[in-house]
Length: 104
Image (tube, rainbow, N blue to C red; front, top):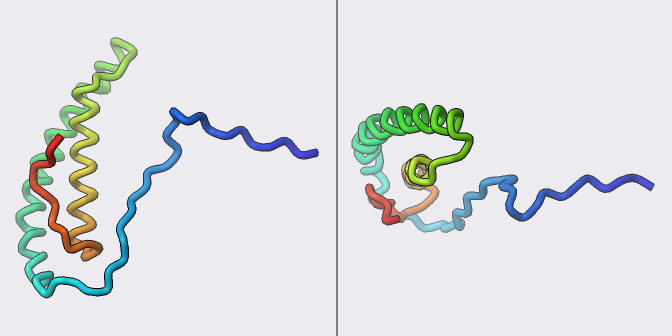
């Protein structure tokens, strides 16, 4: 009898999921999305430099103290969450434009 592979525990993250429902109709204002892309590109460029610095500091924090900092981790997660929402909007997967600053 073959041995079953061990299932991951409930606290272990094994995958990230993005759920975007299909809608056939789309707003005709989608032609202005390239303009949003230019604005958002610069905002995310500056923000990504900041997140790079935070990641560098967080790496050394974890290396020296052996634990994660919740504030630094939260800022990184917030960046990637916002980036994913804007990517979905700019690639016309959704009509709902995300907020620039996500409420925590």
